[in-house]
Image 1 (cartoon, rainbow, N blue to C red):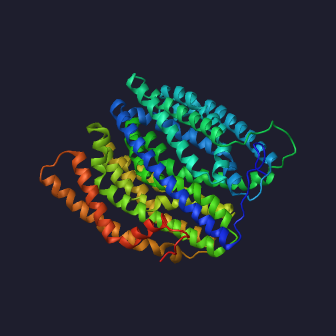
Image 2 (cartoon, rainbow, N blue to C red; image 1 turned 45 degrees about the horizontal axis):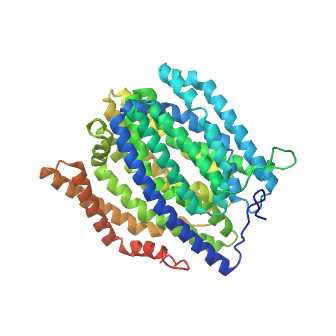
Image 3 (cartoon, rainbow, N blue to C red; image 1 turned 90 degrees about the horizontal axis):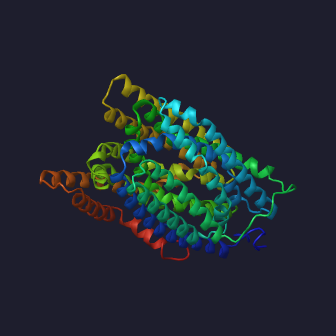
Length: 512
């Protein structure tokens, strides 16, 4: 049934016609989500350019010291229930309501724990009392996020990707406008607190508007034990992934202070933006579609290889190009006081070759119900990456390197460590769902070679422009991006043409 209080209508994809319909919806959803994500990133860069000029790196560093603790608690509080809501073929109305109220309860617990940890957060970073106030102020974000979690999951379960994309964009616009206004009013770091709350509350409100389901009151009798068992594995694995991408920030902040963390964390966030541009909508599409196709091995493999090829064609040139033009990107966005982030961003860009695949691997495991294997793989990856970044921080301090040089070393450590470790992690992921590493990775070979060749051309062009006295970051960046786009398209034309065809044809073309 599909009433306002009932279970969302479920679709079964068991026939050839249904499989074609599923692939068509994947293509339509991917196209819509990508357009919205491009718009979202344009808004994001505009907001960042304004905030970088109004706020100091120290302001972003202070927020960067607090957010890992808050996001850790927020991730734990979800218990993976949003993923279970999407992944399960059948879920009752009673279970949906129970999950909603459990999300609210866990969000409140996370907020209380965050508030209690506020003095310890300040002590971790040398007794900075402003961190106590920031932690207390941001503790409530866990509750704000919980109010929209179930409705977002239901929208993803129903594959209403247009609404999801539009909702995220509207919330981002509202939050960006609020943050820039607060920064112009002289609120400093507190403008970033405003941004957090406005975005989360706007998302929750819009998700409730778009999804008609409403929870009934809390009651006993709706069994959620099996949901918690599956979600618990995913939540624990999500914790491991969180550690993989956040231990470095905690160590940099503790070892080198808020300014260094501000420079590093913003370089890291900018590196992740191309990945989020693609993998955020793609992950929301992958989990429901792969879950529905899990009973048909051939369709599942075809979809998964197609998703992997999309990631390769889009992210490889982004990684290679960002490695070369990172200094111009930081100068254009933030001006001279952010120039030190250019080298860090260039070093971190190397991680983008594998970061997108690592981001979506969790949803591959979850779609096949292999969350225990996901937890094992993510745990090994998190432990190894923590050791790599800790070693880089220790080496920088031991050699008494200048702070910016030491933090750039940490950035290279993160990228190289993740690249090496991701090879084994992704092979393990593919074996878990019945694919060989070669079947899954072969389509990435040509985009990878084309991206490397493109970066060499762009590197030479950048050197020539600098030798000619071109000093404008905007002009340099525009010329280099245009050159790189032309070179990459020419070298990877079969893959670019395939990607274009996938956006237009029905049914899904094969991967040749």
